[in-house]
Image (cartoon, rainbow, N blue to C red):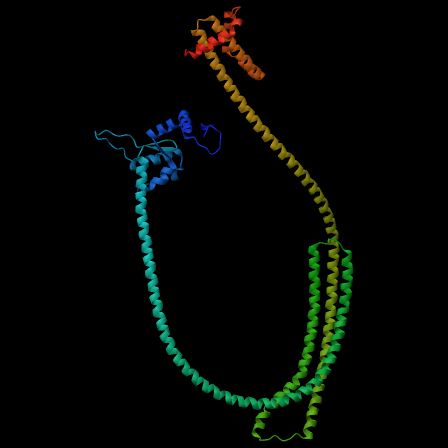
Length: 535
């Protein structure tokens, strides 16, 4: 694949190896020796400024009116961006002409991903950009000032309208308050006269009604006590008859429910709803019975209300008389007879209501039997569902146990897989590092061997001293032997198979003399002086 070369230059800030100390002369010398200063100087002399194509379009496309980039439409590849930059900068930076009429150097050059500017070109574009931004800022400021002026005018206009509205409202309210005060005064006098007449009439009616009320209350209290005692007894008997079978049924259900275990929740909910409906039906029956009892009480008060209505026109007749006549003994006897008749009617009404309540009780018993049958059916269905639920629950427990075992094994396998992956990654990384180290060593060895072969060939071609050549070949053999001892068998075979090595050994065997071993140290000095002399 495509690669990018990166050069890393390490600079020592000081010679003492101490932190936070910078020796400028030493640092500058290192940069100069590394070629950084020369590279910067060369870069500054030709194209000192450079920008990405996207940055050029982003910063300077606003300087050309009506300019539209094709990169946004065509996909934005490198060729499209380069064409857009050339088209934009050729209009913004035209090629100047010299005094003699010749064309000057191009102020910019577009590369594959960057644009390079000559000295002064980027500063010219930046100045034009600042000027354009100044014009745009002036336009924006004018719009802002216009908006502020319009807002201020609208506020003043609305304030003046509010002031006028409040003043007119004050005048209208003042006029309305005067008219209202006059109307209230007239209404007050009119209502006062009507209230006085109504108060007088109410006082007369109140006194007459108070006398009638006390008498009727005394008679009604006696009848109420008797009716209440009778209705309490009837209600007690009826409630006892209704509640006893309910209690027995609930007791049996409680005992039966205590024996059942692990029943299905949905069926229990349905059973509870059916039981609630049955209880609601019984409660409705009780409420109906209570309402009938209340109707009995209301019927008892009805004759008293009728007598009250018959006696209501009497106060008008009594108002005509100055003083009512005192009650006589004959009148009291007639009132007692009327009370006796009303008591007889009330007892007859109570008998009829008792017969009605008995019929309703019979109907309620039939309904209760029907609810009992339905409840028995639901209980049977619940029992069958409970049995099936128990089987399903047992099967679910077995499945849960199997699932738990599988999950445990899966977790173990996951952990083992994770460990294997980590070991694989570590081994792969270690192998990659070893491979890189091996490649670097092989390259260095090959470079070293090539250098040595070049030296041996140069010595063989240009040197006429046979003893010096033999000493150099002996040194070459020693270097090869030391390198072979420190490498593996593959590197040994690779180095031993090189043609330069074979030629050197052949030459050594052909040109070596018996007295070469005694002159090795002298040959090494000659070799150093030979290469140190600049040959």
